[in-house]
Amino acid sequence: MRILVTGGAGFIGANFLNLLVPRHPEHHFVNLDALTYAANLGSLEAVANRPNYTFERVDLCDFSALRAVFAQHKPDVVVHFAAESHVDRSITGPRAFLRTNVEGTFNLLEACRELWPPGQGLLHHVSTDEVFGSLGATGLFHEETRYDPSSPYSASKASSDHLVRAWHRTFGLPVRVSNCSNNYGPLQFPEKLIPLLILNLLERKPLPVYGQGLNVRDWLYVEDHCEAIWVIINAGQNGRTYNVGGRSEQRNIDVVKKLCLLIAEESGAPEAELVGLVRHVPDRPGHDLRYAIDSSRIEAELGWKPRESFESGLRKTVRWYLANRAWIDSVRTGEYRRWIELNYGSR
Ligand code: TDX
Image (tube, rainbow, N blue to C red):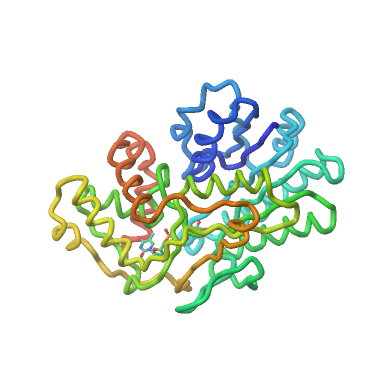
């Protein structure tokens, strides 16, 4: 198969390629990425020189460039990771989210429709549980849960999900959709909670906790997520949606405490000193209280389940950041420093 991956230089896309390119020399993987701020080709050093891997720098909003890449590589399968994904950035600057997530997905759908005869090809659309809005203290998101997005980010992802399903119903485009919970693991850009905290802990900087830290997220180790997508591509049904969760609900404050303990163990720093870095800062506007995913469909129909517990996945993640200081330095550019000042400077 010829598999085109959008956003392959981002966190989840790069983990997907690092896992599958070496494992499947019989498939050719094309990584299409615009290389915006959170993307990093340094995340793909392990596969960059493999004969079954090609990189193309393309912005999904440049439709003529996208068509040219489709005409050249003629993918059988497209895996759509490319997205602006940070909720806080969508609050300070929503325009990029509408552009990439909505217009970019629209262009991709049109490129697929142009290339593939009716009923052929497959577009796998990678989405988020944030499209369902917020849960209260109990309950789970199911595939049929009503869409109720809270942030500009989640509204843009909800829009992209609707477009993908509409192209299936109206034009017969073969599509599959997955909605996943919060990913964490190696190669995550340090604007998201877990890598931000790890880096701040290593440098003994304050640990910003929004509000009381009582919001709950369901954490999914990134390789478990990538395996789920691969299973859906190989054994899922067209037009079907699969929820993918980690069975690891945690309050944010507990994530912070677990990281303090792990970093103390791994680096020899006194745990109490690390816990003392916690700072409760003003909350995120529209902050969803709780996300939790029911993954029973993918577990029952496709036999997938997460391999990592939160404890084992978090330890692997901490060890990866401790061992990859050069990668950390390479992503903390001027743009990164500007964001930290903008988001946390006044909090
Ligand atoms: O500094 C922080 N302090 C803090 O308390 C940051 C960055 C976050 N938080 C809180 C907000 C959330 O409750 O931690 C939780 C996790 O925050 P993020 O890492 O920003 O993730 P979240 O907002 O939950 O969204 C994530 O999960 C769904 C991803 O960013 C999305 O791309 C994904 O779709």
